Length: 96
Image (cartoon, rainbow, N blue to C red):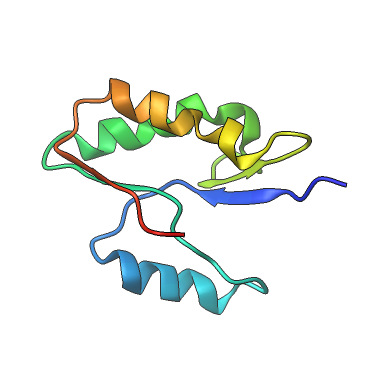
């Protein structure tokens, strides 16, 4: 059986505080898989990510997506390919 990976695509001023706020309502431990820092056009890029992952959106409107159903996390990291196409200033990969 494949585990479903829940993913949140959104913006935060303080990533740690946002994760803690989301953690309060979550029965499982949340971890940051990927984040980007943008100095301009952040709303545009956020919408691009939402559009790119529309197929996996849990409800519309919403910022939660379910990835899984036979797809491994490594395969899902097409996020990398999408982000690489975006005009960004910095991309960080936290240690997992």
